[in-house]
Image 1: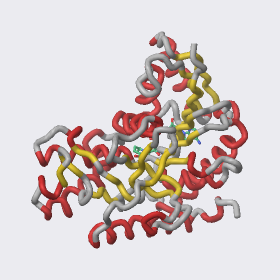
Image 2: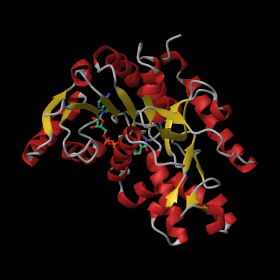
Image 3: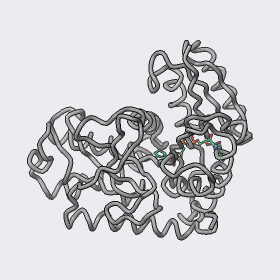
Image 4: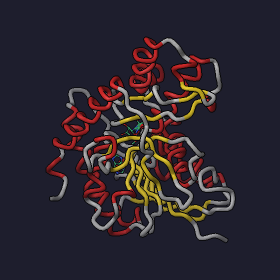
Length: 329
Ligand code: NAX
């Protein structure tokens, strides 16, 4: 038997947790011969529900599920983790300012970053889903002494998938025909789904969809506001599609990217595309054959795109400023 991969998940009893655990345990991500350990982390009030989820995992009798641990203790939860999926966080409540949310959730991610540094495996990779995910990832990364910054990611894949689906519907093709779609910047309403470099069936999107007004207007707005539209329709925020996007992200980071394509995920900027070094910003990423990743260089940025990228990067700078007290000097 192969050595099991250990995946730690925070917020495991939440909506996204419920939609992600069973697919992780089934072998969807790491393959049909790769055993998995799940270490599920919740806060005290979430524990009874988590016990129920553990019972359901047992009742699936998954052949690849080696061990399940449910805990509120961070060191126990991140022990030996090869992947840490940081999903749990406090949702924004009525009357709460964005800065309040940044402060409340920020504190969660200092402790989690420290515990990951103490207890996870040496090769740990951390994907932050809990919002505001870019800045939460920034905080976790800066509090995880000794773990290199290239092991931290924040999720913008749901936005990429949403954008691909919108373009495919407009063009009357299948979404798998849409490639080279990059989400730039923040997972927020300022994100920029870059249609100028995206392709449909290998052709520039702008040649296939000639309605430029739609691309610059309704398309971008629909992608930016999709989360709110789901809440309005479902009465709850997106969960299954968010879980799916998190699994897509992990898969894309462990599988070489098809030649010429890229995928979207927020990483710690090295200054590429003039994006301030150290910000967690989404940009075009390729996974190499050796399993490491790189920023795809030389993607053209036109004046329209630059304006959109500047706006979303400025928001990330403001968020960073607001949580400066949570980032060790
Ligand atoms: P739920 O409220 O259903 O679940 C969150 C769970 O996290 C709860 O069970 C709660 O007890 C737990 N939790 C809270 N604080 C915790 C802590 N300190 N340690 C461990 N567990 C903790 O939310 P859900 O719908 O699952 O969403 C989770 C997060 O994903 C939210 O922050 C949400 O905003 C974010 N999202 C991010 C997306 C992205 O694309 N990056 C899209 C979907 C989603 O909105």
